[in-house]
Length: 319
Image 1 (cartoon, rainbow, N blue to C red):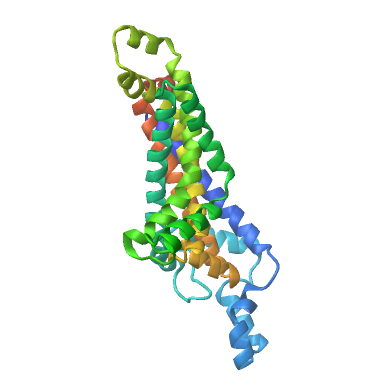
Image 2 (tube, rainbow, N blue to C red):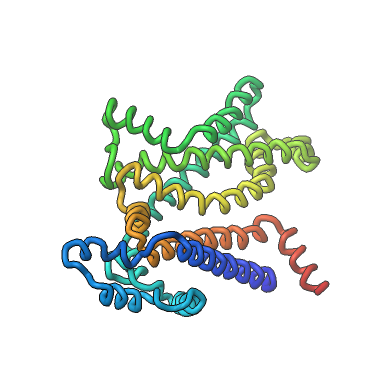
């Protein structure tokens, strides 16, 4: 188990390093001069001279070679310092820390809705005795995946905000303002989880141990929930971990659509102003959330399936 944990931690560190490195070099090679963009308004009003612009470049390290800047910024990042925002003049960690809680609230709510909705749909589809109903239920995830999330959001706003007037259309108005963005973000994720879990449940229900449980008199609900679901949920858990990063990226778009505070607003502003430290910080935070969720799921695997721990132990002894 110790070897399993060390391996997963090393993989997590590698993902974070790769995300930081790729983001750094992509942002560095983008066209345009971020210092000139940052000083654009001031340059128009106060006519900044080249000496002042050069001083700003030295302040943010743009006068140094790219590899030297990468090494210095990576060293600072390892200490928890992601630099200062070029637009706000504050530490990037402070800017992100202020915007992160609303985004995590939205992402967490969407993930809970997706797990509940996708899991419930898969269980209902595989438990029903009516063949036509099963076909209808299993076709719903494919339909939901094919529809763009922003279109779902617009339809929900049109129906539940403008016509029925149950939920607010825009802004961050407490729990009521969270419902439509969370549902919009959850629908595609729930559809993918339902597809994976339904296929895993169908395969698990055909296994000999399930037939044995039925022969011993286990009811339909007991067979589904106690015998089949435990093994069938492993692929769904893997997919849920992969979708965690997608949910965070989707939250950035959904926050913009619903005019909510969060990472979406600061990311859009940072991209428009070429605030490279903030954009890079958002990438690193997104990668960190993705890594932490997947690490938690990896650590759950040995608890749900003892074969993972046994296989790890055999690999360690062989080494």
